[in-house]
Image (tube, rainbow, N blue to C red; front, side, top):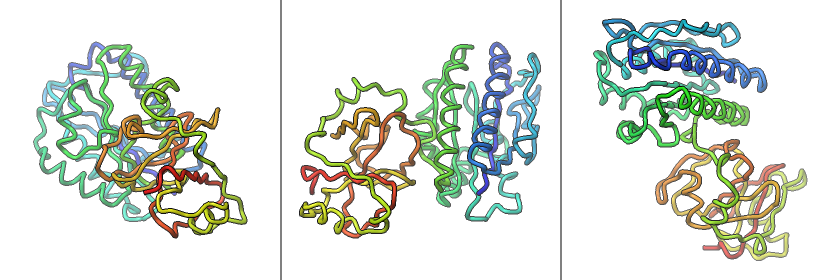
Length: 342
């Protein structure tokens, strides 16, 4: 299992007022990657480019395919923001070119994450256009091994979604010292969650920043319906490892009806737009469901979307199964809710 991570760091002149905070943010990001790599024993190689350097607003390679353990922090006062423009697409394209050139780029057990941090939008790329970078990112994302995440100014998310970047991989932030701190904390959490998911076999995500960790119980209760008294939750033991979902339900003295069983999200799954989702509080065991579950998770109401585990704070996610022969695995939760049958 191996990760390649590419980081695009904005060095345009507009970053000057927050350069000190930006340096600390980069150091935090590197520390988070080191921690995730060490905790889960996942080999991690990092490349870093500086976006918009000097009068010519160049893209400069600072780190080329270095093991994350070798990366050094930026010293105070050494984050120079003197660029005249922001060649955002060129910086992303340069990272893609570097990462695609690695010897094991086609290894199915290798994943790639490109993290872009900027306080402005694209305004000076020469090699890559919006159309060409969008096409390239779409092509790579379809391999299910590439993740692109962007931290951008408020109001810029819509522009990036036009280029095919999932909303869950975009974080809008305020260009202040405080804004950097908040965004840095969100990135630390996202990196930690990605490594947790990666250790479970996940190779990409459309929900890099989206999670339930900041959602309060009050918000859950307001948005959803408490169905705790209508459901029974089981943990699949060794004896039922590999059992078919219909057989397991019938063995619990419940007549299996399509849609009455919900499986705990334990690996990346494509969740169809018509499937119901339930949320279970890990502390109280209370279970909630309803139309608002997708809103809390930041999911579209009707489209199919990939959803990864390990990114949901104090909640477990249960997805409705419409299959009769889905195989259960030891340690996963299975919820039976006859009221959810289709």
